[in-house]
Image (cartoon, rainbow, N blue to C red; front, side, top):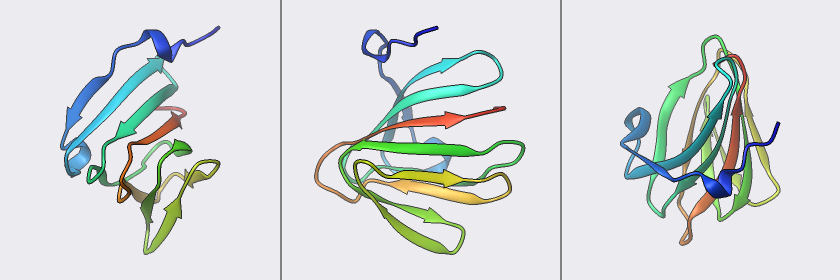
Amino acid sequence: MVADYDKMEWTPNPGFKGGEGVFYNKVFTDGVNKMMRGKLEPGSSIGYHKHEGNCEMIFILEGTGKVLYDDTEEEVKPGVCHYCPEGHSHSLINNGSENLIFYAVVPKQ
């Protein structure tokens, strides 16, 4: 099975999970697992939230930013994968000057 994100439209999600600006995504789900291509414009963020019943992996493709993860702050850039295990909290922030583009996988949504 192939999910062709180039053929999907961006869906705007203003203030996603309490974040700043607009989080754009293209989502593929099979009803159990969710895979998405995401975009955060400069100054935008996904709000700080806890993963209960699932985890999340975020693979950075373009741009730079930071992740707030539990009580730490981690820089992210292309080639980096951020992992948030079940029971932990995180936020993704574009503090760079270009769009932050990434793929995210949430198994057992």
